[in-house]
Amino acid sequence: MAITELGQMGAGLAIGLASCGVGLGIGIATKGLMESIARQPEISGTASGLFLLGAALAEACAIYAFIIALKLAGFIG
Image (cartoon, rainbow, N blue to C red; front, side, top):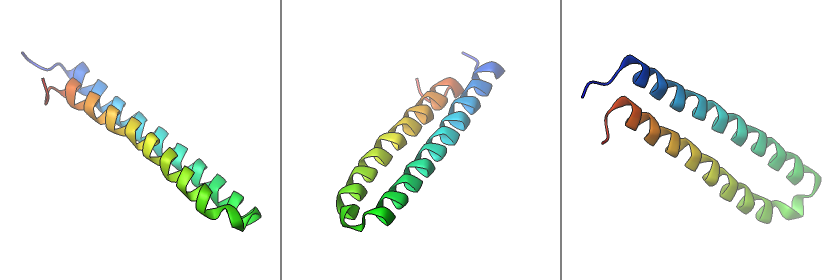
């Protein structure tokens, strides 16, 4: 079964848009983390732990987009 050009273009769009979204989201979250620690240094441990949880969930979205891109490009069944 031949992979069409539209499928490959969809794969590129899927991974490209997902990586832009995840990058922006983690950047905004990091900015918020730094501002909150600057205002209240005593919450740095709790805030950092919650940030890492949120960053991991955001990266999961990028991994899902990568799997979808591989599927659209025909590399996985």
